[in-house]
Image 1 (tube, one colour):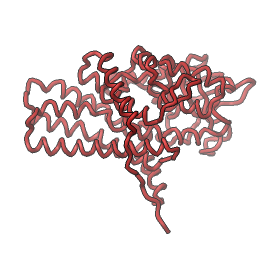
Image 2: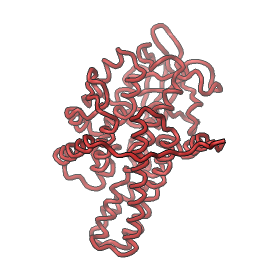
Image 3: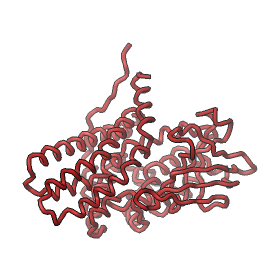
Image 4: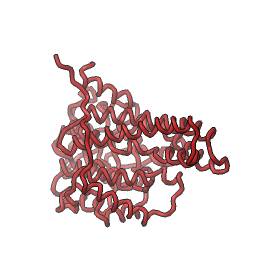
Length: 385
């Protein structure tokens, strides 16, 4: 019997995508002020509605979507280039990030025409932001154990329950929310559906969760008899599990799983100077090799997605290895930087960035699927369990 195997075919971005890179770089150089390394580190976790509006004016949100909804009908690879440049330059892209990456494509694929006509053009303009309503209290990483329910009522659904770790809900207009619309919790993958919920609807309470560095990024979202119209269901009732598992391939393999901490490496290179010692050369070389290898894996997955494939295992491997790289990097950089800094008076900003990266690092094991869940997907995909 032939065992399944990982497949990361070599892939290069087409010339017109690289031409777009030049244009995006020029735009970012013009529009972004002289940000500190710490500000650039926040990148897609930093929100600026004004920046998102400027991106919308350039036509770089929803760039792959049909022109009838405001998109440019470009390839997924053009979007990949834009994402890389936003991360590499520390652009405050968090406001539109989720809507562009996964909520808009979900609506495009499963939403009603009314939903598409109403919401997608606003996303493209950088005027409509989304959160993700998946995780729940006491469920850990077991997404299928959804308890939040939507019960059928006249003209729509009545939602009751709680979602947690909902990034940016307090600054978003909508949340695509995974709910149990039939059956019981024990039914696992059956009876799940997704509703696009207006977060200003009556019956919704958004409570802040303050993270380790004192920031309000996450939330607990409580639904109490919240009414959602029929027109806001994605696809058919019961299709939710299929939808969320397909959606996660885009979330797991993108450049943000590799480049979120890139400013730590940039700062390390800066402070060791132009003539680093042997140990610095070796360590930075190894880190650069890991970045480059992960980028090639991510590009390969992007090529497969563009070709209409579903590389669930490959995207899970990319995310798992990317998580470990981004968690390893701050401490490796700190130790090397403190011992090899060319100018001891120039090290504080570097140490500040390392500290921010260290505080953020635990979240990388959760975002886009926990390490344990990802390895389960990989094991099943390779026929190991």
